[in-house]
Amino acid sequence: MSDASQPIIIAVLLQDLEFGGTQQYAIRLLRHLDRVKFSPELWVLRGGNDMTSLAAEAGINVVRFSSARSVTPLALARLAWRLFRSRPQILYTLTVVPNIWGRILGALAHVPIIISGYRSLLPRQHERLLWRLSDRIICNAEALKEIMARRFAVAPDRIAVIPNAVDADWFRPEPAAKDSQPTVAFVGRLVAEKDPMNLLEAFRLVATRLPQARFEIVGNGPFKPEMEARIRACSLESRITLMPATADIRSALRKAWVFALASASEASPNVIIEAMAMGLPVVATRVGGIPELVVDGTTGLLVEPRNPTSLAEAIISLLTDETRRRSMGEKGRARVLARHSIQTMVNQTERVLLEAFHQQSL
Image (tube, rainbow, N blue to C red; front, side, top):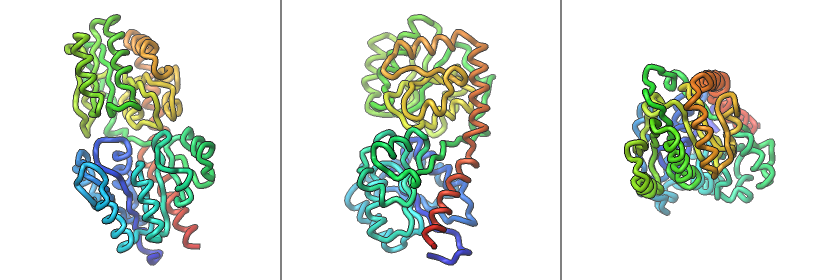
């Protein structure tokens, strides 16, 4: 351990810097960590540069172990070498592969403190075996803490719940930018967990009832070709726009009247609080930590997963009721300001890191 007057050296380990909520979380955290208390680095196991420029703008030192498309044995060997050679005082692992190999190699390298981030529903990261290698585990939803304690027998006193955060000055309502036509936005990865085909079916159902409605889907993923084919088959090319993922999603949210999410499984999606910060009511599925973010009937509407008809009905009810839509949007932003500020998230995270550091020093 270094002298107590020196900042604590912390390495945050990610799999990649592709677009994603966890990557955004890591960059926001490292950007705002108190540099008097902490000296942070961002370690990345493989290629994927979508958010590299954001890390550079934040003044974050990025250490990349490989530029390959997948995590290779060479990348893990380089990680092990760095851990043994420089041995950060705190290693904070995020996402599945870092949570597995970061903990194993960190323990072998005798890294003093290992913190793990648990931000997805039932990740395949051998939690029942590996949680004991974590001095602390940080979740972003009470639902995840409950799963870890009940399903994986993790000691509850090792788990801290710190909700996601958003820059409410960056994500703010811009009423003048609203589309003149009823517009619904979705932003996220086009993967099975997000259930994009049922989202698309809900949009088709809305389109049959509201011919003027428009839909924007922003994201990348394996379902994109299938979605493009389905849009063509339904002759909805003029109504549904598929756009590539981007680091700045505000343009899609600015135009939207409603934000929609059809996830079959979720943890605590950051995009929901980004949409709420921009004054959008949210229609989403009642899964994972979403009910902790969206107050049903107050800041949005919750429906059961895999039910495009219910999703469509909820969307239509908001697109056709301006007063309710505006009220939900205002209450959603107020909830974000009260519960999801970046400073609150950073303060809570620093508290967990310092408690683990001081406890290890005893």
